[in-house]
Image (cartoon, rainbow over all chains, first blue to last red; front, side):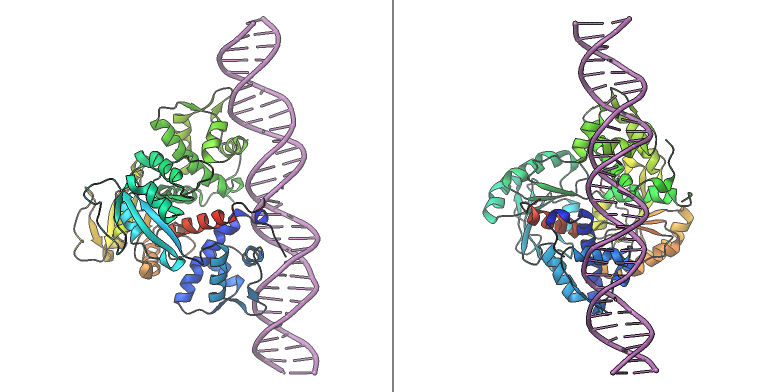
Length: 215
Length: 215
DNA sequence: ATAATAATGTGATTTAAATAGCATAAGGAG
DNA sequence: CTCCTTATGCTATTTAAATCACATTATTAT
C-alpha cells in the first residue's frame, strides 16, 4: 500500500532506528535472516507492530523466511536518508564533546565529523581526530556555509547552550542534536533532537518505584 | 480524579521529564509562575496535554494564575521518585564515562555517584571525583550489594556491553542506563533505558529529508 | 504431489492518546 | 459588587496507534 509522509507515525520512525541498531548487532553475529517475531522480541515490541512499521515504506520481507538482515538494513538506511554521506560538526569540546568525537557508530551510518568548535584558546588549532581541527566558534558561521553542514551536535556547558544554538540556526544548520541538558529555543526551520542523560535515570526511577503496584 | 498506575501513559512520564527540565531553566531565570499554555509552547506540545499530564497525578495549579514553578518541580520530583537521595555507579570509564561523571545535573535531582568501575589497571584506585574511586569490575558485585546501588550507567565499549550488563543484573542493579549504543538483553526484572547518540542524527536526518513533502 | 507449517502484509477492529468543550474559580476593572 | 478575563481540571469526542484476523505464499515433510 502507498502511504503519504504524513500518514507515518513518528513513533514508527523512532522504532526503525531501534530495529536498525539491533540489526547491526545481528549482522556482527553473522545472522542472515530474522523474522518479525524475533526482531520484536529483541526490540521489546510485537511482531505485528514490526511488520506494520515496515509496511509504511514498502515490502522488505519474504513469506516463510522473514527479513534478510543486510537488505533490511540497507532499506532502513534509505528510509532514514543515511545511505549517502552526511557531514556534522561538534560544538563544545569538553569531556562530552570529546567522548562523542571518539564514539564509534557514526561512520557506519555515513555521518562524518567535519569540524569541532570551542572557545578555549589552548585547544584551538589542535587536531584530535585525523583531518578534523578544533576551530574558534567565530569561524562557525563561515565554515557551516562553505561546507554546507547540515547537522551539529551541541555539547557546550548549559549556560551557553541558548546563545550557541542561535548561532547554529543563523549559520543554516538544519538539525541540532542537543546534548547539553538545557532546553533550547530556535526558529522553527531548525530541528532539535534532545538527549538528556539525566532523563534516563528519572525514567528508570519512576518505573522502578511503580513496579509491584497494581496493574 | 484518581488514577491507577497502569492508567498513566508512558509518554506522559516522558513528558514530565521534559517539563521538569524546562522548569529548572525557568527557575534559574527567576520565573515564579507559568501557565499550561506557556509551558506547552516551550515543550512543543499544547496546553490541554500539559494539564492532562499533570491531572493523572493530582492538582498542582491555581485557576487564573497557573502553576507555581517551585511547587510544580517538587511535585514532579515526588512523582518521579527523585525527591530522596539515589545512588548510581558508572561502569566503563573511558571518554564517555568520564564525561558523564562530570556532567552537571545529576546532583540537583538527587542522583549521587558512588562508584566507578573499569578494567584498565592504570586508572584503578584513582579518585577522579572527590570521594569516588575507580574500582576493578571484579569488585562490582560486592559493592552493589553492600551499598544497595539501584542504578548503573553503562558506558563500556560496545563489544563488552552484553557481558557487563549481565554482571550488573546479577549483582542486583534495578535499572541500567545503556549508553553503549549496543542493544543489550537482561532478565525482565532489570529495567533498561537506552540512549543512543547516533539515533539522534538518524531522526534529524529523516525529518529533514521529509520536510517540504506534502502534509 | 499434497498437506502442514511458518511466515509476511494488510483491511477491520479495538484500544489508547489527543483534543475539544465546558463548568468552575480567581483576580481585576469599572 | 458585578462583570469580564484568564486559566485550571474534567468529561466527552475525535483521532491515532496497536492489535486482531486472515488471505497469501514459500518451504519442508510425507
